Image (cartoon, rainbow, N blue to C red; front, side, top):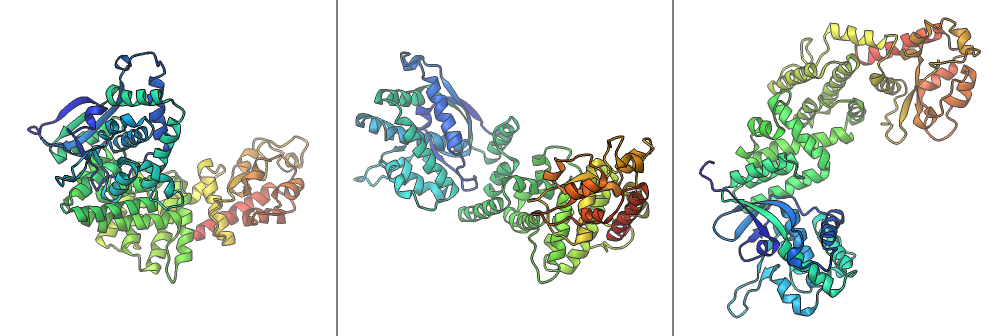
Length: 560
């Protein structure tokens, strides 16, 4: 790389949109994504910079638009590695200005949108910016060509892709906003953008060095994700342009299906599957080093990214389908998603992706995985130990080991089972784990498959932490020193709709049963709480009996 020429130079927008550059957006870049929020912010920044109409345009403070990164040699041809959103939005704004200024300035602004060709000579127009193939013609017709913006209203009821919808809405925003100004003010705005707004153009003819620059800029805070960088690197290594387009579409379909946030998360899980260790350097560095997707981009997308992303989607949304076993798997997936960490996800998506058509095996594996993950959660196992265990489980899955033998990393050792029971039967149930434990108990006792997302439940004490001195609680629990161990133990806890929990009062037991624990309408009954209504009193003996019953239910469910 030391011999690769890297140039960085500041240019006014008038020079950026000139014969010196012919920008193209490579196929592997994500679609145009700026909405009216970002586009409107850019325009308002320009307008604020021009508030003093009396100041000559050449004396107005310059406005810096940041850096763009290009793959560019000695010719004008330039692939945009970073800067697509700004260049596209600037083009839309210049087209909106062209549609708004007096006719004598029309051709001047057109020169910044494309270099006119010659019909006589057979030379086509050369557009300053060409979007990705799927949006390029749309952009030319409705933005860059004369009169295009005026035709956007025809698309009012048309179903457009997200990128085209963004182009349309941003153009219409600009046109509408420019109506607030006089011809002189619109002309002044155009002059300001062309002559007093600047970009730093960083260019290199070498593909790899351009993406290293891209990565450095990302580390310094540009709005780029690791998946954007990896997409550029991976799709860019596919030599055939048609294949690039096909795999770019496939990549974007996966991202759209998962959503951007979960899509980024799946790359963290893929790294773990390949690396089998805690992240010690940047995700990008370790992904390149241990996953090495650029060595065979098509194979990575087809055989790694796609199946693991599908598995991740099915687990996160509990959507696995089969003739048998799917109901049980849905329950288990919901239980796993209740946990407060996702260290279990890499072995989960690996096993599901490799055994998709074997639902009976999946039920066995995921029942034991939830048992293991819940055990870690209840014991508050340190993350380092969890990751080490899941790393060994990944190795066992890949090597085809028997996962159900006693010493398998999937199985709980005897001392682990004893420790789980000790934690469940403790006087003080850890606040972080008690909601999960109660939800699991509710699932075992009622068979209720609800995920409680729409009607969230929270934890309530039957014996209140601070009972009134004259209450029945004080008679049942006269020793104030002994009382706390009953308050926070599993036997004294129930689940209530969150709305009722906010109304919590230190009622006496009979009043609490009638006014607080009884669900008269609406939400389905909570079995765990309904059984409390059967009790005539709530004494230490009742709590101790209930504690034993609940721990025994979990002992059987988790084979402890």
